[in-house]
Image 1: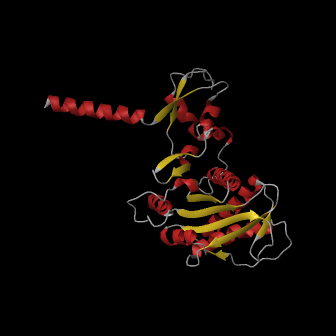
Image 2: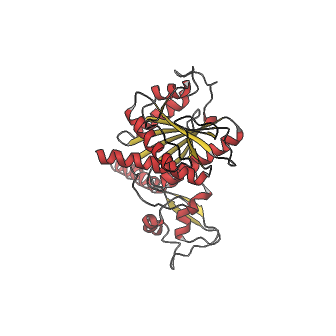
Image 3: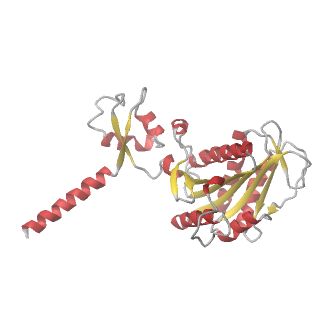
Length: 310
């Protein structure tokens, strides 16, 4: 009996120690680091996690918030870390990694207005220049969304591989996106979730761009999402042209295939160099930061509308 009690005590003690060890990870303080800067570089809100940091490192912090260069400090694992709320997904291998690294030092939480929102961003392109533009827009958009409390998954065009076998979606490379998005949709069930494809075609930062927003004609949520984004672009168009009220309908096979098989509502935003615009193309300046801000404003407007209706 005593041996059994001893064994149970030993198992319990090991479990407790293991749980404690898994509540934090270690980082090395660099030149100029204080508690606030160290936490911010790890994607944490310093005001929220300051006390927890002090508890974890009580044996190493004697005066104020000064940290010693080259010394290891324990950082708490936290679900609200920007490293966990901003995630880059490699769809084929189901590998996740943080979107941001060194950028975290300049990022801080602005609000929690999007705390129950989850976004999936897919960037597509036709040229290397367009690829860089689409990726930069997606990354800046992700940053703007997560600092307002959202969770963002980014999947890029090279994240899927149509040579992968053994999938029910083998006939279309978009199948990898479908599997990844639907899995995470179910994990976040009950939350507001949206997919946005950002497609760049022959864009140039030296000339204005034509922007169009599309939705799936059988999704009222997708249509509303597209229209809220489109409305922001209309208000900021550099053209005096009037636009039709309705956003465009998916026509290309990849977008249609994705829309028919994923669980969240989806919209598509396209960008291309300005030419003879069609009725629903909106002329916008090609400033990446401003462009990302316009998209985020439209996204936030959609979320606010849903909250208001509820």
